[in-house]
Image 1 (cartoon, each protein chain N blue to C red):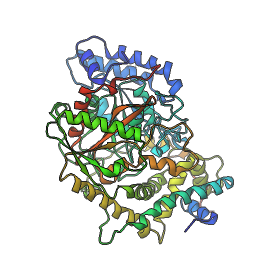
Image 2: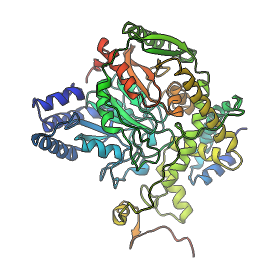
Image 3: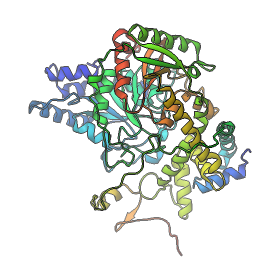
Image 4: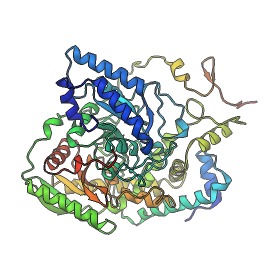
Length: 95
Length: 483
């Protein structure tokens, strides 16, 4: 099943990617080319095979429930595009 | 001084033939003089390097020793470095100065390494040619019209051109081994979980692994020693003792069982590369190795599975770049959605956008089973192939790449053409196995690499085989003309 231009627009919206109108045909072709490669998977018989999420099948470690990090808000906000009084600034969301 | 390996530098510093500061100043001068031809560095950190070199000299004067004390290196520009730009090759992070050091950076700095700079790379490590960088393509020092491979192409070009002895790289589908092969270096992707991923900007978290790139296996052993080990900050780090890699170099290869997968020598492999790989097999036989043909029947399915798993994980990982907390923000956003969309649309290059969209699609409602789950099942088939093969052999050997370094721009029309170049390297990432590429000769003046794969945590075995090979061959000592 090949993606149409409207599918690509929907995917771009889900990914919050603003695409240029002019790039859409080229992007659609490229995505279809990649998905054509990916679709070769469907020919593989995987009946009864368990999915492998972690190569060594390790599970997440647990740690003691104690505070290990110190507050470094100023340091982390120094690299933000826009902050004020310790808050990140974005365009108004609620009128 | 620029011809010295890490091991030779360690001896020179120990016997006071030169100081770390003298060496650092000489290499910085060489980088400024020659790198404009290559574009292998995104940032050269002169002041940091000289301060670290002076500190290393002071530590040595105070009686400290150590193989990496005063050793000049560079980091791929996806390892976070405190207060130094960490761009990941992207406009998105062009102004990003990391607020902390990656564990790899911190450990190597504690061992006394001197950071000369941050090396160029494919944007967010997505590429096999180092052409997708926001900072421009990197040139291969063996032929400036050709790519150096990617995504650790800057590290590869810089070390191959003798701008410095070694550098860090990362490998998600071949991004250490493939550029090492295309520039005549030794590069090692460790076992998944061997080297901490903390502070390494994530591409595909279940595949990413940092490792060393150098001219010799001996130097890779030294650098890996400084990088490897358990890190509680990385939830996928494995708590497994780190062996002495330098001590592993000198073992005999007598009786070593080497498996040649027949799938690695089939259609698609440049026959001139096949000949050089077979020549390396002959050398290893002379050293006592025993050769067996093996089969990895699911190898051909690795690339399709990878191009689901890696983009799916990337689409999740790269959602953090939102124009709010750090990184690029578009001008005059009209609302929050516009801020997200334009910041990401303008900040990411086209290859990164493509992979985010493939991953978003694969993970979207109704497609998860057909794509992500299917890919993870194939991932197990690939791992099972390796586990069966390692019942009968100690290491697996084949070509690192099917083709020589191609001309810059030659594979840009269709992204899939470049993806296929990773056919021999991607399986090790899916299975989490260690893999090494070592220089094995030249075709038309362009380097050829041989890949070795071993069972989990047997990096020492890979380094041993490569080191023994490098005792009887001199491919790794050849330098490109003009460098």
